[in-house]
Length: 212
Image (tube, rainbow, N blue to C red; front, side):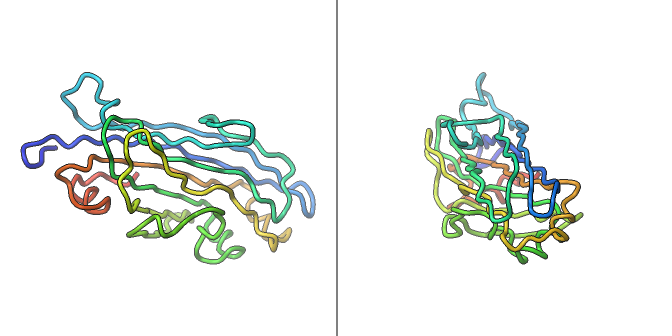
């Protein structure tokens, strides 16, 4: 893609944080986490373009500074506060605009327990960090697209949230609705800051990067 005779560089790194919920008894829950990574790199004339504009998603888990493989919890109780701390880091050489895409499966089941706004399940989520937040629901999956208010400088990272709160009010019948498990996905996308607009929302509209 060309804009003002300049190449627009963009890279997106997707990392999905997955949790599986199963019912073993009236009040007990178990969960496991896994992560997958997907890289999408736009055109570039540089030999190492993935180092010019790049973004990484990683999480901080108990006993570790960084973890890209996920963390497994066992025997989770209702009202459990689970450490789940996804970070978005600018691993490129230049400043970037960033947007984050959160997905929640089993929306109808979560809505019955937590209400319509599923970000209420996320401890440490700061709505003031994000603008132009939209939510769509399709195939029982809620997708939140959020544009970071600032510019993410090279080598810096931001924390999306710090924990996932299992509602204390979840009873056996409500938990049974998650018999097939549930997922919470976190994906980050980034674009350059030059010649694409004055903020993240304008930049992503300019480069027309798909939300995926």
